[in-house]
Image (cartoon, rainbow, N blue to C red; front, side, top):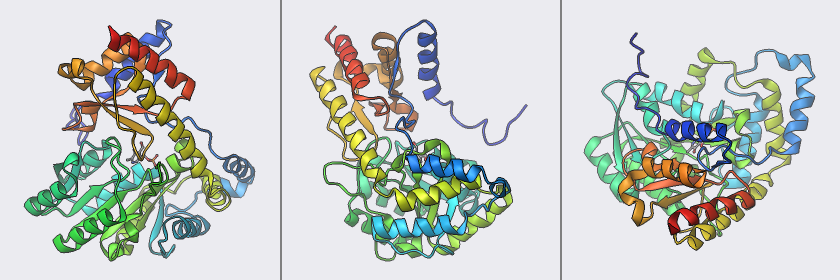
Length: 384
Ligand SMILES: Cc1ncc(COP(=O)(O)O)c(C=O)c1O
């Protein structure tokens, strides 16, 4: 049978490493999984308490609203003002989404159609290139390591309707300054495209870097929307709470589409998210500190193994160039080798698209002791 849209999607290369991991575990091996970026840090206690309390009230068992309850959108507006210095109208400029991923995917449905182009840096988080394709658009990639200059050239050559960017960046961990954001917004206005900024790592940055919201740039609210999520910042991955914020007609269009598709996140979750944003605004700082110490443990452990990687200034990942002696294997074979011979699962860079094959990505989702165990095993492999 022909399955539309998904038949043309490339195979998910991460599944290959995952399969091997599961097979090794079945054989009794203790594989340390630094592959999938699935946060292991508990969600704030207040979120769990409020969820429990709200779930006990039958009124909250009914359909909710797909664009988010009023108080949740208001809490998101307060959070943006406090954290990023951005003022937004919660009525017209904010809609809640079922995580950033759902928001981004459905956003493409209202933004692009066949014959239109979306520019996406490569490598990137897979949904960035898949979502425009699912919506029928043509995807043109720009080398992520070429930075904003490369992006500007690609834009000028391909005249896209939409450009998707994301800083701090998964997987490359690249960060952007407020000046970089302003350059992107200026480019969007000059070249007349809509800028979509995935801000999933808004609060995960180190060594004094404070990631700027693109919506803080002059003129951004006329040409940009941003996706913000509680997944990483508040370690609430499974709750599925995110927002699309910024240019009002775009936010409104997504809210209208979603009103046909869903009834929003379960209302007790929306209530718990509202209270969390208001009463645990410092939680992202604690989360970030945990990732920082894991980052240090991983980078110093890898350095002891002779594998030198610059410590990232943002995200919960380390993007590591494949050591020279293994370079020819490519990232998938090297990742399989790490799993088989060192009991460490990582994500092969090729899974993030062209330009990713020279790297593997470590996700900082195990504690420092386990990270130490992983780097000692890697050292043994590299010393052979
Ligand atoms: C760049 C990026 N965007 C979005 C997501 C998913 O966010 P959410 O859980 O809010 O859908 C991730 C998760 O890994 C990500 O790396």
